[in-house]
Length: 336
Image (cartoon, rainbow, N blue to C red):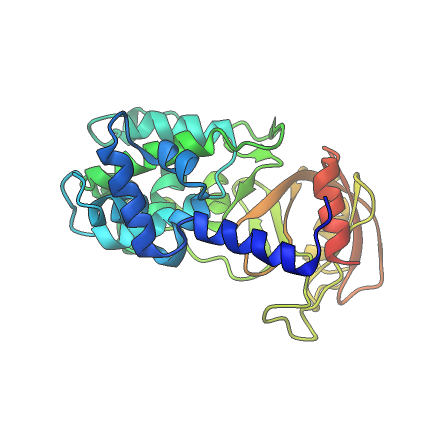
């Protein structure tokens, strides 16, 4: 359907007016919907209001904030309620059954999980969850058990998380594959992860807080894995001329990636990249389209094919799992 400019503006104006975009409008919509009777929750609100999750969590707000502003009942507040509610908006990228079901099973427990009885893979999932939600409420000295206790001291946050995970479970858009060769790592190929989740999944550190990962490369020594996280579109964001590496998908199976500008082919790192298969280490690729995105697509394990030059090394990697067609198309468009 093609419309002229005037008709297009009329249609768009009508849509904007029909969808509650302002905070006050959202509050009134929630209040009216609850008054109409029937089960009321995040899923119904999204279905009937025409809003998306990103609209509910815009501006650092949360579903609990909206419910409370509408005068509807909520559970008791915890000591770090505001910080934890704000963190929930950083969970919208969760898009695989392992996290959705794993996080949900943990949150369904009335008491914090006892980490000493959890299997290592489950404990890593718990750390991924706690680090994501409680990062700004815990300290470097906080143990993971203390982090779990802190999260469980916020019943409304846990309740909202369970609702949110239910909605996210309906938005899964890709088929995922487990990470072969690393059974303790609860990541799924072609799902999206924040840096905190990636490091927690690979067992980097032990406490409730995950150390920051600022650069694009990380050697996870215990897992013997090179974690390479890169941004495809470098036309925006804070990229200097020395960090504007040329990273892109060549085909659905091949990825061109440039190392840090100081990496020589004969250095320890350069040799590990080239001989990782022989040396028994792994290379894991994580990509995002733009720097503003918090989460990276996990492209899965890759093997060295060849390289050109050095400082930086221009390496071609072969993916164990070909890119889905939509990801390849968006990756190609980002660097066109």
